[in-house]
Length: 280
Ligand SMILES: O=c1ccn([C@@H]2O[C@H](COP(=O)(O)O)[C@@H](O)[C@H]2O)c(=O)[nH]1
Image 1 (cartoon, rainbow, N blue to C red):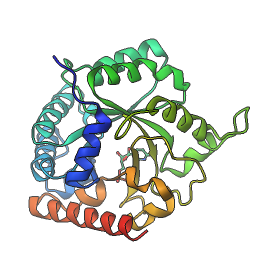
Image 2 (spheres, helix red, strand yellow):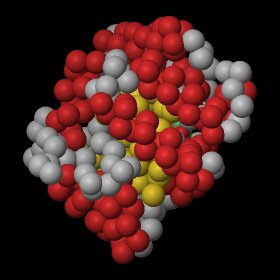
Image 3 (cartoon, rainbow, N blue to C red):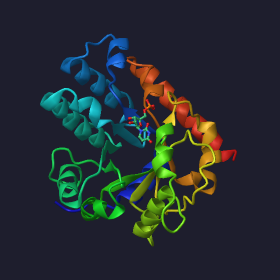
């Protein structure tokens, strides 16, 4: 199978044509109930199908949260597989939020799962954790480059607990997050129009005080249920705001199961992002 165009280029095109919004597919048990569905495989399937039908033809990125599918075992994974294929078919880029991170040899197996074009779970990009050492991600970085996929590396996560690790100081005085961001910048050096190695930086964090100039996309979760709003983006990302992919899950999903209401909510977030970025 021929490789895809590099993920960074595909993402840039999607952001320019569809707007940069990413909507998460997070089938929380409480959301299934709120949608009038059972917390079972049929409910999971209906929920996921509805979100894909509502949004895959209009948002740049859909981000299934793997954990919510894994909790149903093999049948949940089958729903996930089908939704990845359907979302990609409808034109959305699929970012698998799996946050994998392990020793390099095991990382190779994760890379084969999400980043090999022949895998049933092949996704346009996957989230990974660098906190076993950035070098442990090499199999994923190489597999992504070979298939035209992307990798989003956790840098500064949206949860308050992340700071004790990510803000800690390394031997050369940089924060651990900055060290990881510098590795990402090195991976993306020279890539045009955008590198394929992205960073995850929470929209909840205020002035982050790190250099976000990585020549790659910046995934910004935390908008909606975690309290951040699109208006916070310029303050968090400064000059780099043009490379931000703002991510919302429950903030949109709570409007289901009505397809029109899901679409309206995504459009509202997208409009708010546009005005925040234009008005900075
Ligand atoms: O720093 C991070 C990294 C990932 N996430 C994920 O994004 C969604 C957020 O869901 P909301 O309903 O919009 O709060 C979820 O899947 C997280 O695992 C994050 O929140 N923060």
